[in-house]
Length: 128
Image (spheres, one colour):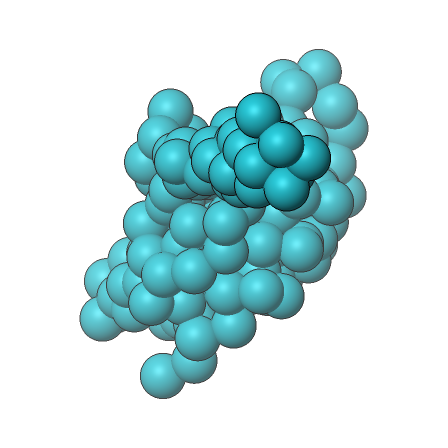
């Protein structure tokens, strides 16, 4: 095999290997349905889908929403029962995130819940 043939063979082998590892897209890190009731559960809900890592879905601000979620994944867990929360009412808004093993509910019924809400507001507050 001549030097030119060897160079061509190496180039073909390298090109064949490029992109093969990890080129098949895996499932997103999060695949959620966001349901938001701006005036409480008795009102009309707004619903969107959100996928993160890779980012997408019908959520109008999916990139900003995914940034908030990935920075504050801890707030997907409910407030622990032994935590004292200020009794400040923040409004009637209610939201849920569900899908892909995630089931989380959010409200603005006290200081602890308001803090959770504020961290994920870019996800939860769907425009009308």
